[in-house]
Length: 61
Image (cartoon, rainbow, N blue to C red):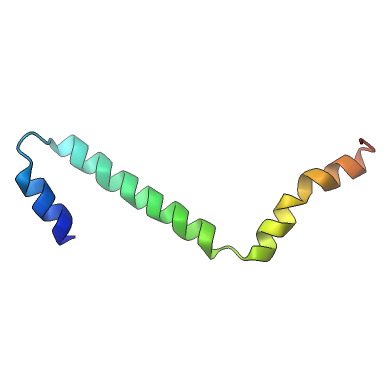
């Protein structure tokens, strides 16, 4: 956090809106990374075969 504090102190023309948007983006991005990496590998293997399974059910080739 000290990096961000020093960065924002040095900027003369940054507004509060840009700061808030940056913080929201960083929080959202870190949440997405946490969500993706917290899922097990089996979950993604199962999900990857769903389109193939649906084709078999519909008798499509």
